[in-house]
Length: 214
Image 1: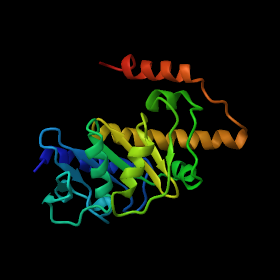
Image 2: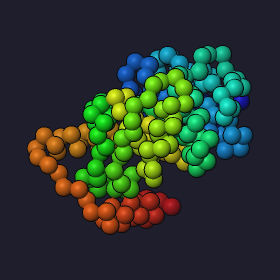
Image 3: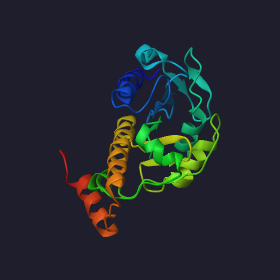
Image 4: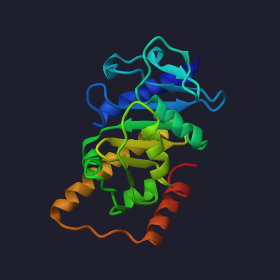
């Protein structure tokens, strides 16, 4: 089932260690098939170098396993909670990337100090409260906290990102860590000044409507 999505997820998962967003077996990517509504997600505890397309587990939105021989990710229920409440979301990513997770450890959102943040996220990266792993609780915090952003920090935990598809969600995860690192470096030198909301809106519109090939 979902052979093309399984293959895509395999390659997208390799982007996580490549971009220093995860260590060992932490983190995961999921994708929702727009035709069937089924979701493919990484199996639990499998190292990235051992991961193969056929290892991805297929579930429905209620968490029933439709296909797959391996134990499903412990974050599956939270991914599915997000999909059920956000029909616009086609991909979800969870990471523990170090600089962004440092902000999460403090329960601190990341203000818009950089044009790259305005471009990609259209506002600050919020930080939601603490939630335990294994059920829907983390998904609930993400939905309640993420607002119009494509990324949300989770207090004492890590990062969730969303996108129209899995590739967009992975890109958002890469960008979260990139801007978090730059903001951390800036804070060592002094106190950055936030970009005015009207300029954030203009930058985000240009990036989403004008920049790149259409």
